[in-house]
Image (cartoon, rainbow, N blue to C red):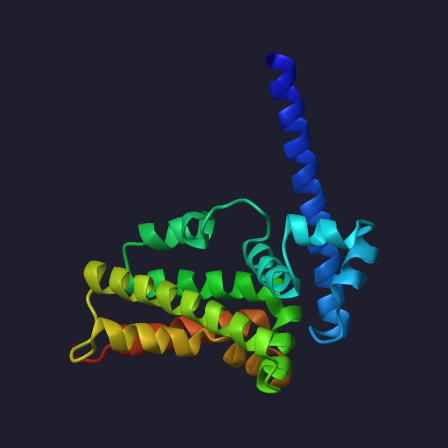
Amino acid sequence: MATRRYRSEVRAEQARATRQRVLDAARGLFVRRGYAGTTVEAIAARAEVSVQTVYNTVGGKAAVLKAVYDVTIAGDADPIPMIDRATGRALRAATDGRECLALYARMCREIYERIGPLVPILLTEGAAGDREVRTFIDTIESERALGTTNIARHVASRFGLRAGLSVDDAADILWTLTSPDVLYRLIRRRRWSLDRFERWLGETMADALLGQRGAPG
């Protein structure tokens, strides 16, 4: 029984290692060649596995792109939501609204530091009308909307929103300010430093949701 369990654990570890090799290979190709220029065959060759192994461990090219994005956002393959990681836990524990949103800005910065090289795929190939990339973008934008709604609800229940602002509107504001397009424009196009961007994002989100410092509630 122990031997069978050991063999099962070894197979599971080998499968995880193979999957990670596929994702690492795909990420390098997506960044260098773009989505359209990357094939499953090229991913398999770079990962030194068969094409069928790519399909078996991850899926087709669209599924590989989504898996690469998810792992890159988190920084690892552990199934732990961002809100349950270190910065997310600090965000939830914050006792001041502006501090909470400053930590949310830090989380966005940490995510961008990892996914930055993938953002051009979203902006250029998505805009070009690639159906698979558009579907992928729709999925991650829906996931982002869910995340910003949860942050807006947390801020509203813990600290209160400025007068006249609904939770839904607050969520839309956060969804817009944290979009990959905004990050890309300021950091890559306008050459903002990550420190400057994080500071601006935290202050802008706080002003929009809580009101400017010193302003009447």
